[in-house]
Length: 313
Ligand SMILES: Cc1ncc(C[n+]2csc(CCOP(=O)(O)OP(=O)(O)O)c2C)c(N)n1
Ligand SMILES: [Mg+2]
Image (cartoon, rainbow, N blue to C red; front, side, top):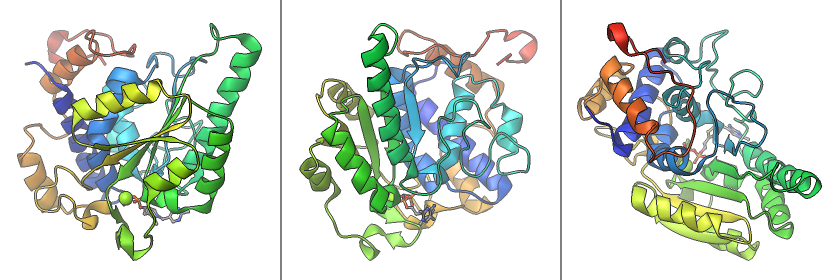
C-alpha cells in the first residue's frame, strides 16, 4: 500500500471525525476544510523536527482558528510527535488529556501558542515573526532563519486585534510571515454575510501585504501559492477558498459542519473515505512511508519497527 498527499488529508479528516464523534463535542468544519492546505504546508514547507519539538530555529505554525484543534492534533499525530498518541486522540476534550478543546501552549508539544479566542493567534504570530527578525539581526541568519505560518478563519479576521496586527506586520515588512485564510464563507452563525460584508483580500492589500487567492482543495495550486509566499518581500496572505466540512457526505460546504456531525453522518462520510476508525496499522505505515520520503521536508519522530504487526510510532 502506498499513500498519497490526498491520503494524508483524508487521514486528518478521519481522525478529526473520530475524535469529535467520540467526544460528541468539538469542531469538524475547519479541520476537514483545511486538511488539504495543511497537508501541503506540513509536508512540503514547514520546517520542523517532530523528534525535537522545541528546536529553536523551527518554523512556527499557529492555528489561529483554535476551535479547529483536531487539525493540529491530527498533524502532530501523523507526523510523529510522540506526545500525541492514538490514545490522546481518543481522549480528545477529556480532562487531563494532551488534546484539549483548544490548543494550549506548554501542554501539548508542537502547539506554539494557545489559541481559541479568535484573532489572538494571528496577533501572536506577528509577534513571533518580529522576534525572529530581531534575533536574526542579533545572531545572524545561520542561527536564526525561520518562518511563521498561520491558519486563520473568518472569525479571526473579524476581530479588531487582527487590524492592528496586520498593519504592524506590514510596517515592519515581516516577509517571513504567511497567513493562510480559510475562506469558507461560513462561521458558527451561518454564512459570513450575516456578520461581515468586507473584502478581506482588498483589506490585506491596502495594508501592504502581498495577496493571492487559490482553490484551497487544489494541492498543486496551494503548493505554488506557498512557494510564491517564500519569495515575497512583505508579509503574505493566501486566501484559500475552501468548503467547510469538506468530505462530509451530506453537508460539505454547509455552515452546519462548523461544530459536530452526528454518528450517522460521520459513518456516511467515512464510508466515502476508505479508512478505519482511528486508522489501522497499514494506513499509518503507508502514511509514514510517504511522509519520510524525499517528497517531504521535515524530520519525523517516527521509528520504523513495524514487526509483529505493530507500528512503533
Ligand atoms: C473572540 C471570540 N469570540 C467568539 C468565539 C466563539 N466562536 C468560536 S468559533 C466561532 C466562529 C468562527 O468562524 P470561522 O473563523 O469562520 O470558523 P469556521 O466556522 O469557518 O470553522 C465563534 C464565534 C471565540 N472563539 N472567540
Ligand atoms: Mg469560516
